[in-house]
Image 1: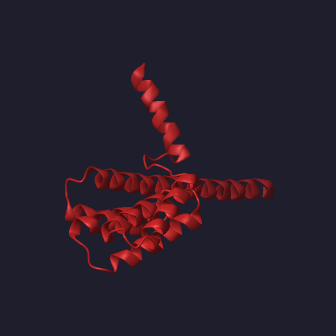
Image 2 (image 1 turned 120 degrees about the horizontal axis):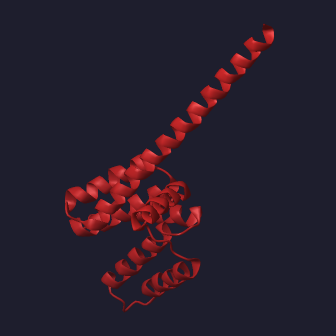
Image 3 (image 1 turned 180 degrees about the horizontal axis):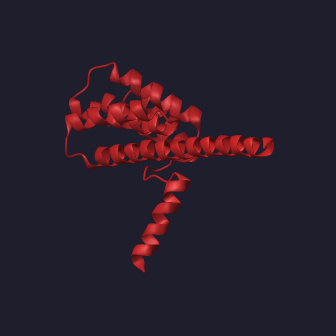
Length: 168
């Protein structure tokens, strides 16, 4: 019975578009924004603390449910990638960018970025899970597209058949 429950859960997840990427609420984003502001206005804070608070804000933004937050996170991450960083820092930024592009529906760009993460660290579980999520989403969208096309073709063929039947 357990396997049937798993089957129906996976069907529900397929149609609901469920993924395993967490969401972030507006209050968390506001807290991160406050932290970044404090780290940039307090002259005594270290550059490391400032970078960490910006990374937390970027994480929160790309995990938001609001499209404008996600885009802001993408813009921040792309700007920070322009400066040279150690490979592990770049890996984190690339991963968050991949999440952001996944959330905006740009699956090919998301997959490209997550593959770059995997090149840096091939056994990184988070990146591997995101890659599978992206590939599942692409496959699901393809199946839905094929279903819509097949339905349209069926309706057209049915309409033609009905028109021909009336003529006789």
